[in-house]
Image: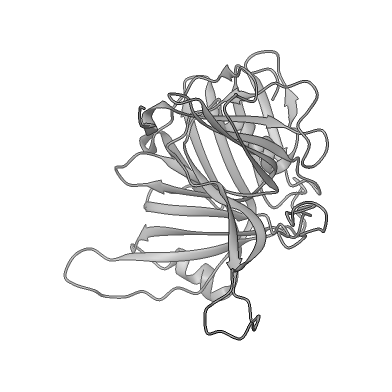
Length: 312
């Protein structure tokens, strides 16, 4: 019997019409990925039952927890399905190329995610999945990837695939295609950075009668943080942290007529600690937090994707 190989793995995503329930009309998309740790765990519970012997009794069964992460290559096509999972449907303008704009929504759609081992026909289907985190590290010489954290409700193992998927081609973007704006002006002194979107989902809603799995995953407040590592050339950014000066952040990737912008219209830097660690050039880490106060965009984060896809 052959052993499953990771290179034959497949990731499929669909959107549910009701939490935890696969849609009646299935339309899965096969999306590019680097790794998947999403899975179900059910802990064993220590019991204190006494039966006139020192021998331990059989353990109890705990609740089922569907959690994990998916590492994806950053691109200009498939990423739209993940942003839909984070922010719901986009506002679309244009007739090709199309401009998709996502802002913070009070609700998030639930998803069907299938982890397929196609070479041995084994498929793990996860219902009631919601995106709880998005982490993007940019800069440097490596592959540009993002990590997506998932909370889900149920796992089902089958020898049959969920449905025949439509493959979404990878339209990769790279670190060298990035432009960074801070305070509305292009920043030329940033070495690297990170954006973290935490969607504050409540994963504690385990219900009776559902094999003690999650009966819902309600939305909570977003927590948006990040950091940039910049050349220490002057005190401009440091003074913004010291004085609590409001600024803005925008990371833009461009490839021909296609582009991706992740904009945080209102941020505040923390007061940094500039260290001397040796004789080489000095860089400073500048953590920040994003928020919504009064920006005209009415959202703490605005994602704009321009490509040839008419709708997600």
